[in-house]
Image 1 (cartoon, one colour):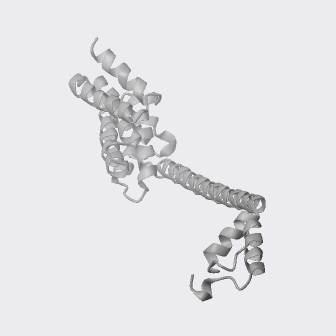
Image 2 (cartoon, rainbow, N blue to C red):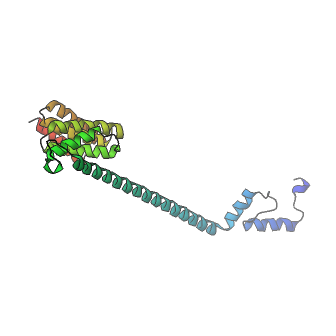
Image 3 (cartoon, one colour):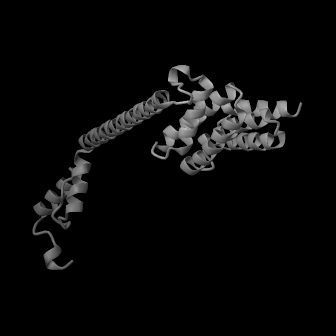
Length: 231
């Protein structure tokens, strides 16, 4: 070794050996941050390991807290949206009752349920101020009521509008779109259009299955419709 790299005395060498055995920095090794850190860890393995576990636990706790807070915020936002939608639906339906006029001096009190549904359906088809979610729910509700009263042509018109709205809002591979197809297949069958009914029902079935939504009530109804159309 060069003279500068040699130990000045036997005692200096002994001291370095002692420091090495105690996992302390030795004078023969350059005192870099990485070297000192490694030696510190070697001397305090238990403490460093415990500290690391505490750090992991703290980070995990913070992450869990943030996740819970975000989920709570999302649920609160969903609740606000659903409440707003419910109010909008209520407002629309009340508006139909308030403004219904049939003619010949008759007002809402003299109006039949069928008249009100016809008026509401006409207003809904013309309305473009409602949000897509609210409008879709109203289309589905009024079309079902129209079908129950036997006004099948009006129900089918609302269902066609619902299909187009669900496709444009939620996409062609959505549960919402599949439900509108299944609903329309029922009206088409009642109208005697069995081939078109089967086509819509089969499209709904395939979509429900591809989405893993066989437990959806409309999936069962679509299967039932295909079966009854074949009888």
